[in-house]
Length: 449
Image 1 (cartoon, rainbow, N blue to C red):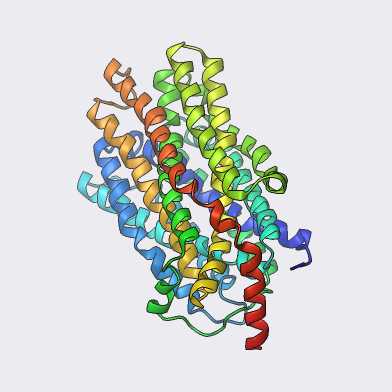
Image 2: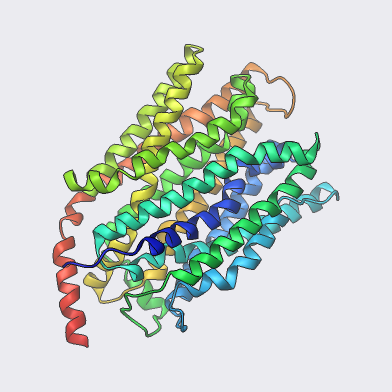
């Protein structure tokens, strides 16, 4: 089946949809643990528990949002209108998350948990359409890979912008008061996020319309039955996000207390942009190897990069440590990007297998649910390790606390990347069915017309 390539405007509009969300959510992913412990004044154990409980609470909204999307019928389509409807509340609560007032300790924890949950809930509602709309932009699996690469370009551009400017802006506006710095910096990112969401809404027209009728909850969940490609994606992404978030959330601690190079935190986080080098090679990789094989090797590389990090630490070599950090960014970039494209293929598989096209439900649980629960555990596990090993903010750390930082930064991600690899080893057998699936679905739709 041959389809026309999507336009350059549509590709960059799709990139802007993920860039918009990441301008706010990236600050949360990278810096919320540090904000809670060193600015809001929560203990590491409290912060870790707060992150996990909040993530578990707002993760249950993923299937709810998925069903809402599947039942959405508007003049703009199923996914596109949510960029318009949710962009304002998303940026408002994103800002409020970093404005913890000076009230009693318990009240501060409640406020932090409430704003964190609300922001996460709205993020699910506005980020799920970024994934679900892909199947409505094109029916060509190869073009979906290309669009996913553009999406990752937008995401990584946002990560670069945030990590290159967040700490300098916080320091500049705060003048030694990080709380004030966050309060001034976050609205800047919020305004940029808002404008990008509106740009995406204007240009991302849904051209592949398959099913207009609403899908019941029971029918939606039936699309998961026997959908092994989706089960593999879900299982792998769950462990991947634990590893990924644990790694990035420990960066400020690792560089400040293990390497005694706090000045390198913006550089280390900004280097995430080098993952674009491997992400934009994905279409080329897919010409020579199966997507499942590429995915598996990217996770192998992620595990090995953690080994290089450990060697750098043990040898007290900053250069080797940075090599391990960069190798991990390159490898995990591919492991992060590919599943977003494969989720649309799993939606096709579910329709082929069961006759139900539950694009909202499958993509919300397969992407946002995994991201949020994984992020909760990825932030909580290292925080609990910090608390157990005696971490105290803004002072020289004990040898035991430094070991705790190392464990959260190196070993937790390494183990979870390895666990993410296991289900991927079984993906290629289902990938071979894609040409048959596309042809069968095409014939079914012609008959139904």
